[in-house]
Image (tube, rainbow, N blue to C red):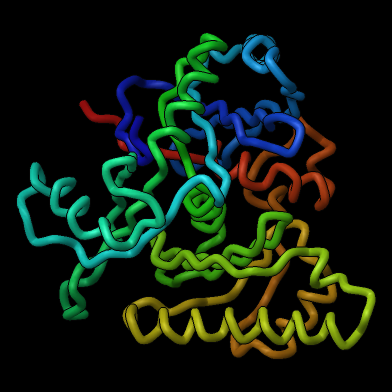
Length: 314
C-alpha cells in the first residue's frame, strides 16, 4: 500500500472511507478537470465489533463502491509526518536513502515502518535545498486497515492522511499566484497548512481542541486563544523565512471553527482571516444537509480526501 500512489486506472470519482468515532464516513466526489467538484453522496456507517467487515461491505455496496476508486484516511495517531531534506540520489535509490535518514526520527523501529514521500516544490531562483514530506506508519496499522477492506471485498487503492485532505480543500480556495493558509480544529486537534499552486508546503499540528477554545472560564479561554495565536504566528513566520517566494493571501478557517475564534484571529493576524463555506467551491446539492457548517465540519476530511486528483499515466 502506498500513501501517494499514482493512478492505475481511469475513473473520475473517489469513494472515501474516513474513520469516525463510531464507524466511517463515506463520501463520493466526482471531479472533471477544473470544473466544480460534485459531491455524489455522504453518509456515516456504524461499524462495531466482529461484524465490522460485514457492516463495511454493506455500506460499500450501498454506495456502489465497485464504480469508484476507493481510499481511506488514517487518524493522526496512526502515523508520523516528517520533513526531510531531499536526498541527492537517483530515483530508484530514493526510498532506501529516506529510510536510512528517518531511522532516528521515528518513535518506532524503521524496519516496522511503511512509508511514502511527497516532494515540496521550490523555485530554482530561491536557492533553497529541495525538501520533502515523509509519512510513516507502523506496518501493523497498515496491515490492519488493509485486512478490514479486504475482508469487506473493497478494492482499496490509496491511504490518505488529513494533511493531504486539507490540502485538497485549500487548493480550491487559492488565488492565482498566491499561497493560502488554512486552519482546522477538531476533536483530534488543530491542523495548520499552507498550500501554493495546489501543493502542500507546510503542515503543522497544534495541540488545541474546540472544547479548550470554548472553555467556560474566560481567563482559560483567552489563554488558549493566545497559545493558538502564538503557534500559528510562529509557524507562518518560519514558513515565510523558508519559502520567501510564496506570498500568503489570507488564512481560511475550516468549517466548525467558532465565530469567537474568527473574531480573535481577525483582530490579531496581519492577514485577512475568513470562514470557509464548502458550498462555495463544491456542488453539495445532492446532500443538502451539508449546507450546514456543523455538518461540513463533521465530514471535512472525508470530503477533502474525496477531492483527490491525479495525472493519469498514459
